[in-house]
Each structure stands twice: as structure tokens, then as C-alpha cells.
Length: 160
Image 1 (cartoon, rainbow, N blue to C red):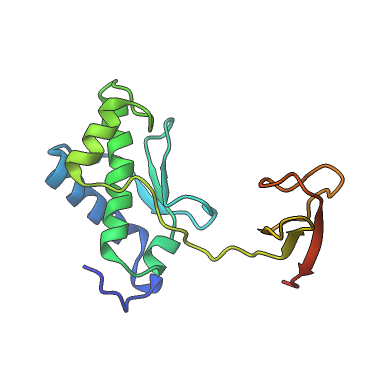
Image 2 (image 1 turned 180 degrees about the horizontal axis):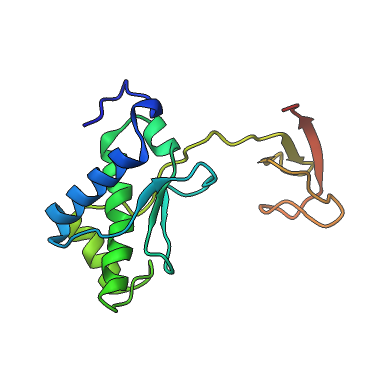
């Protein structure tokens, strides 16, 4: 399969399709009859199941992360949505059927952070000293410290 040294260039949609079909037969005892592909526009998720087309899209950063178990776990997660939806059963993350199927196939519930956060602002409470790192600027007239309700001030701005 894939070792931790492999790069995304060794993976393509056809290889992903074959792996998805294999996992579907092995863990769900059902065929995967639709398309699995990489989608580089995915940013905050490991993959997604498309309800209308029944296709599965995988974030290529999962492969770049370099762990076979992570890729397989994401595929299992999306296949849980896929098979439950096609069987007419509840397929959302909150549904008991989804949680049970995910647990029985040993799929993953959450994908670890795939990209480092770009924390550009540091805010400091002027009363208690609590520090808040943020990606975006916040309105200092509107927000206060969550710990003591003190006034916040901009501590640092990191260029990105």
C-alpha cells in the first residue's frame, strides 16, 4: 500500500478508486459502485460523501500526511455515509446507525489537523494576563476576556 515516505504523486484517482472498492468489499461486504477521487479544494475535512452523485472525495492532504491508517480511516468513514444512505438508513454523524457502523469497521470519527493554523494575532487580557491567539482580528470594543471579563489588548501581530 503506502509507506510514510510516499508522496501524493504516487497516488491518483484510479489507485484511490481501487482502494475504496477493496475496503468496501472487505469491511462492508458491499460493492462501491461510484467514484472516489481527490479534491484539493477540501480544507477542513478529510473527505466527504456527496448525497446527489454518491461519489466520495478525499482531501489529498490526508495522503501527504503519510499515514496509511489515516487514509483508510477516512475512506471507511465516508463509506459508512455511502452505504447507510443507499440502504435508506440514517447516515448523519449523530445517527446511532452511523456511529455503530463506524465503530464496527474501525473508521475514524475525526481527522487530525491537516494544515498548521496561521495564528497571526495575540490578544492579552489587561486584568488577568490570559492570552488568546487568533487567525483574524477581533473587535476590541465588543469582546472581553472569557476568564475575568477584563479588557483585551493587542499583544502582537505576526506577519503571514
